[in-house]
Image 1 (cartoon, rainbow, N blue to C red):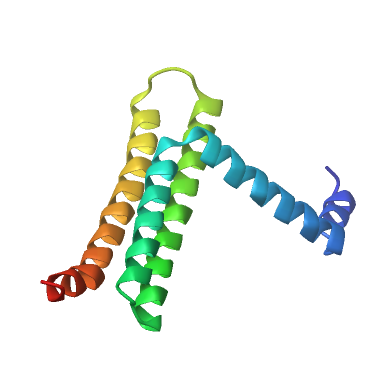
Image 2 (image 1 turned 90 degrees about the vertical axis):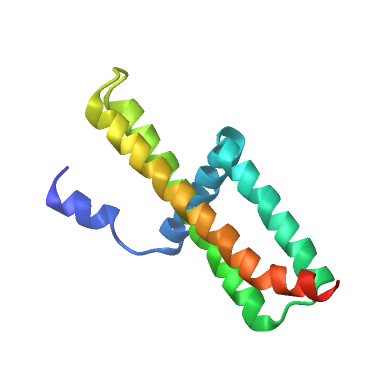
Length: 131
């Protein structure tokens, strides 16, 4: 691609913005249709929202939980992207491909565990106070 074409391609416009939003929604749609872990995290989010409403958590607690869940979602989406790129590059079982996929999965796992711990810190004292 020539440099002039590249500059035209990268020009800011409302149409380009709308396309970016469309592609982002397509990525979310693909991940939710194909990634079991996103469904598991979705279930965790629903449980946390129900607990948050029932236990009447405050604004700051909601903010922390929302940030935690957004981080988990972002890392899960990046993990999905890593897996797709690795699969595009090679179908062979290669040690470096395994490392890339395993590290992406580990990042998603660590963020999920951290999010669960955050929820425990917020909800456990409130649940214990009920008894």
